[in-house]
Image 1 (cartoon, protein in one colour):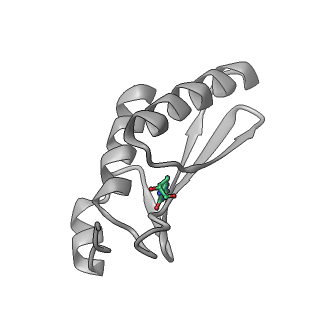
Image 2 (cartoon, protein in one colour):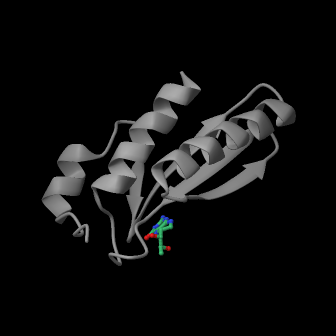
Image 3 (tube, protein in one colour):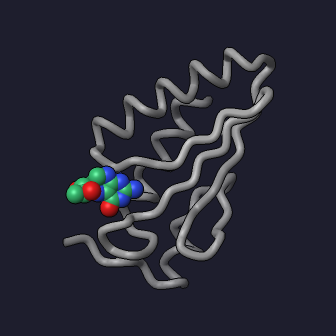
Length: 92
Ligand SMILES: C[C@H](O)[C@H](O)[C@H]1CNC2=NC(N)=NC(=O)C2=N1
């Protein structure tokens, strides 16, 4: 079972564009169109399924908010950090 990271570990491992909100890490991705955000959300869902680790994805007007936490561990784990990194690669 994966263990929650300590606050220090989160601070050092959190990718640059992400922020911590309690037991979640959050990033808002910006797009030129609503449908570009929808497409990104679809790709994010595919990465989530590959990792079997599922974020909360909110699709808004030209923005997509992704929230990650590890429910099984009750906190932020390396699974969240790793998927965040993959989402950043998808976005770039
Ligand atoms: C049984 C458990 O729900 C599964 O192992 C997976 C599914 N996707 C998941 N996604 C997230 N974000 N956290 C989990 O703990 C998690 N667990």
